[in-house]
Image 1 (cartoon, rainbow over the protein chains, first blue to last red):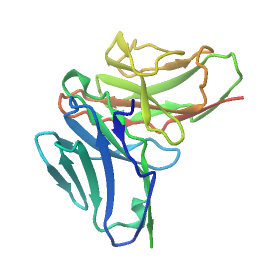
Image 2: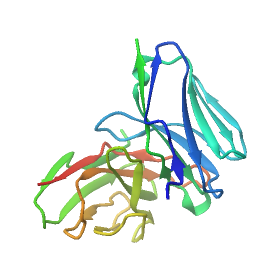
Image 3: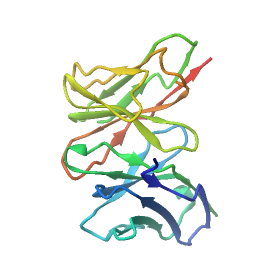
Length: 114
Length: 114
């Protein structure tokens, strides 16, 4: 039972354009969502998060949108840079004492071409 | 510098052998976690500990054991009962502030069973 799904295994984008990574979830108890970036043979690093009380959170070139009715979130990267090439995981938490118990999607490999 | 240190980075094991992966953090975080990553899959939670001398099973705890005798340390033992132990293992920690869930990850340990 995949509670968090990233249906696109890979995404290829030209430098300077927008990258949009998508994530769907099924568990209505999730109330906090995060995006992590991961390079090969390294641990993931936190990128941006959003609470379920918001529908948008922005941090520099990164914006996360949350559509609770559709149980969908997306990560926008504008403008995309070659250094953004990595695997991106979305993750969800049910909050409360479940902090840190994240349910991860399968990941999307983003390639940004110069 | 504060962070999470995992060792060894690469480990080879013969079938039937137990192996222990080390995880140490100097972030003064209360909660620590072990995740496993397999190719094409998201991270899956093995065990977690929110306080010293206490730990809980995650989604895939079978064949694994942990201890939490010190706040800084959360070693994971992969036992011979684990049917498919070859994977990338990630240790993480969080301050435990409710409503956040942001995890700090180590660099990972790659275990290969020969």
